[in-house]
Amino acid sequence: MDVDGRYKDNIYTGLEVKVILKKDQRTGRTTIGVVKDILTKSSFHTHGIKVRLEDGQVGRVCPKV
Image (cartoon, rainbow, N blue to C red; front, side, top):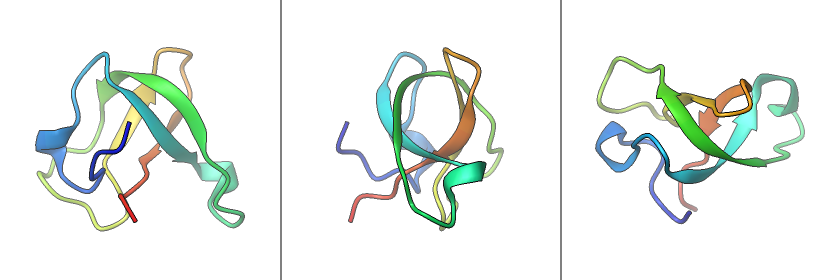
């Protein structure tokens, strides 16, 4: 679960990750889930790669701090 979420190469289907959902961006609250789909097209994103979790929620994978 400690991957650098800014790089698409680090993210794959089935990986358990911490994401920040759109509704939680102001608070920084994280949600743990398993990646179902990778939604970001580019190989790098400064705020984290956007993914859809198996439960249907969409968020950005937390960059490793």
